Image 1 (cartoon, rainbow, N blue to C red):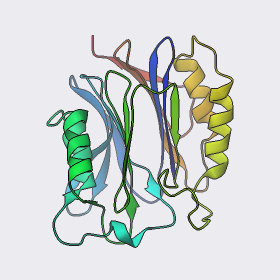
Image 2 (tube, helix red, strand yellow; image 1 turned 45 degrees about the vertical axis):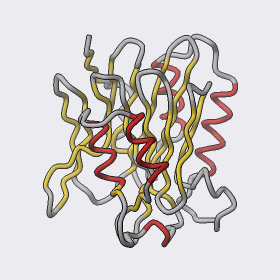
Image 3 (cartoon, one colour; image 1 turned 30 degrees about the vertical axis):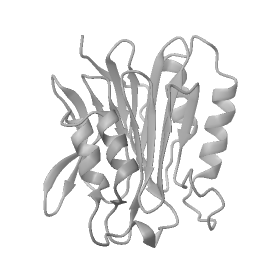
Length: 228
């Protein structure tokens, strides 16, 4: 359960709620990026989400219900590795888009991880393993929760987040031209979760190259890093 959004008005603002249960995580700021890392039992700390100094942002919501078409089957690209390559600036969004349009992309067995990837120009790429991808060239705004934008008529699931999607869309439709970091945090707060708890809320002011975040829905305690 997660919520991703991008807004292109007077500024490019990216927002992300990481909703995570029963997994150890940490936020690690560096000179090249602010990474939300998850402690994998086999691989150790993996930088799976966050922003980098080039202006890219990586979010990876889970798609509910799981689509068996996303399970590994033969040749293809692992969506987790594509996301890490963008976050660590090993590939550009243009390169990731080319791969996703040309080759099969798979997730891990039994879980359909999607990708919400953006760059410093305000473009957004959504990837749904087993289904394909959709590219948005500097959209006014785009929201992604936990159901596929490529298959909106899929089976209803209690964690697919349609309520969060509708709430975020309503707030963005009414958003002013000077939409800023504080406005984005208001949306993230409105769609934050407790059942599968929101453990990190992050906002990236791409225009100012500044990342803001709070943990465990403590919206009164915001940390920040500027890459300029």
